[in-house]
Amino acid sequence: MTERIGIIGAMEEEVTTLIAALEDRAEQTIGRVVYHTGKLGGKDVVVAKCGVGKVNAALTAAEMIRTFFATVLINTGVAGALEGSLSPEDAVIATDLVQHDYDTSPLGDEPGFVSGPETVRFPTDPAVTQAAVDAARALGMRVLQGTVASGDQFISSQAQKERIKRLFGAYACEMEGAAIAHACYLFGVKCAVIRTISDRADGEAQIDFPTFATHAAALNAEIVKRVVASL
Ligand code: ADE
Image (cartoon, rainbow, N blue to C red; front, side, top):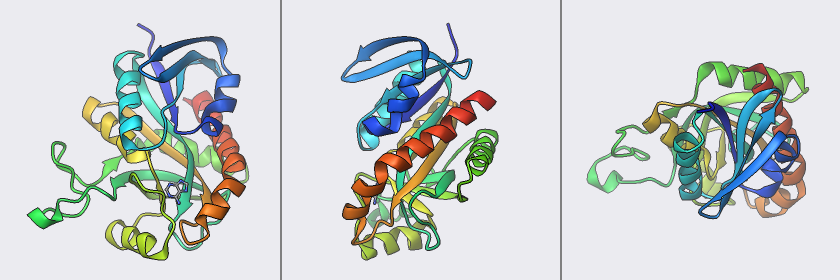
């Protein structure tokens, strides 16, 4: 059994440079996801494109943990900015994650409260998170650490954005991180969510996202490479 670092991105541009950098590369397809194993910076890793959204992310996370013996999962990708000072190509490294679209509040629960694990917030690993902050700073990026909110929605209006900020105090929004952190929490595996801003999650987001996503994703992959090498 080879223990590995698992790296998950939702889209091709979020994982392509990492897969290209693998040494001793092999691949295995399970369901519709291709798991690429090999060495990155001398470490055993498994890299996969999970597809967009929380279900895709959670299934891939579970597979990496159960089938590929991942002991750390790193989620790489882009995010929409919620915190006002963030601009495209800044980094947000998650301290904890919430599911902004998980809502049983009519039954008396707090918004985002997930039954089963009985929590709103899923934590990341402090040491891996710090390694990501150091790596992003070493690349000259502006970095914020804080809550990241995930949901099965592309956020593109001021009203959606304000709701997530108000309820969860989140700095950035995306569509997979909390599902991966949730899976890690259930299996007792370390987790880091590393994101680079591609848009401001407002009325311009659908224009900014295609403009900035490819470069932001490539920058983010550079952070991940450095984190892996440091572990
Ligand atoms: N990922 C990148 N930008 C996003 C946005 N505005 N909403 C959800 N996920 C995103």
